[in-house]
Amino acid sequence: MKNALYWEIPSSLDLKKLLEKKPPDFKYNIDKFYYILDYLSRGMDLEDLDNNEGFINVNAKKLQGAVHNYKKYLDYMLKRRIIRTDMVYIVGKKSKGYLIQGYKEHRASVVKIPITSWPMIKRKRKELAEFEQENNTTEKKYPHLTKWFNNKLQIDVIGAKQKVEELFPEQTGPIRGNRKGKPSDWNKRYKAIYSIEKFARQEFYYSVDDNVGRFHSNLTNLKKELRNFITYDRQKLVNVDIKNSQPLFSTLLLSKTFYENKSRCSIFNFPHSLSLISLSSHIPFFIIMIVKSLQKADNKDIDEYISIVNSGQFYKQISDLLFPDQTFDKKKVKMMFFKVFFSNNHTLGQPGAKDKKKFAQKFPDVYNIFKLIKRKNHTALAHILQTIESEIIIQRVVPRIATEKPNLPIFTIHDSVATTMGNEEYVASIIREEIFQLTGLHAQLGNEYWQ
Image (tube, rainbow, N blue to C red; front, side):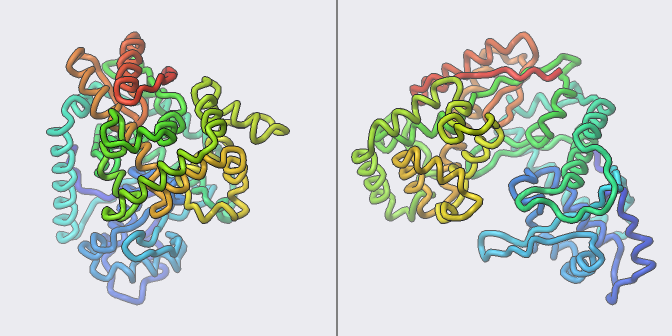
């Protein structure tokens, strides 16, 4: 990574002019304003904006380390509508989220502002060093993945930016607020531009999630439509993905053997996931509850769900069952499953959960098992599924490919592996074999050609 000392902020913000016109009522340093805006820009690149309505949850301790009276800076920018907050703070679980405001008529690019104050230069150097250290740690643990992030990994900047303009066509007028639960197009567009420029400068980053073992990188955070502009050593890439991976792995949770310690794929193989379903001292009790529920369950209910998962037309068949009078909308069905897997049990009675409720009514025993797993922690189900996915892709598939074909470029995007064209069948065979070896499941795969 190039250690240039500058801030990166949206070009639509003329902060210097605003501060001169409407100065704050406290002694300020403009670099501290830039630090916060740069912090939010970096957060947009690293986070999935859809997960938190576009808001970036800030680390108050980190902000205070750089800007001791950061609340005054935030309050000023909130008052001037430079930023916005979700006002959601949950002790020990969630800090307040903030996002940079935008206007539809401002086609913001990323501008670099030189850092001028010596304390902030030292702060930037410290954070760059910490960033490099995290990369180095990941490189030592996962060299077979990180080594491919080199100068041969390129992005067609012009083509990618043209695609961004197609995805987010220019409009006029101020943003009056986004649909609840969705980040604004302005934020999505700026994130895309920011990510492209980061990729173009080859400022690569990578880390592995401590919770579920997922590998995160510039590639996993890049908007899906922009991957077509990525090449490795001037070769086109193809992404081999597990079709409806989370519904597939969820079928494991509907078998009593998954809750037996001696099974080849058991919840006991994933201690972190196991601890999520209850307090550790009560884990056996919860396992007994789930197993008893499975023993009482209507096998027809569960068997039908498993049959649909294995059909090869999962989303279409679910749509026909639950929404027979509606045109098939894959995005709608996927969103329903997102809610089934990720949302709190208590949301079932809310208006926004009507599709989730339909699933619960059609597959009551399946839903009941999922509900039990999420009883104490609504993230438990998703964590278990993602941990199984990471065990297969990161811990089994990638090391095996690296051993058998050490010169074959490979990149992971959670439940998929990308490689150079012509090698997709080999990669697919390894994924199928490793899934079956661990789970006994026969996975269906798909190829996504980046061209």
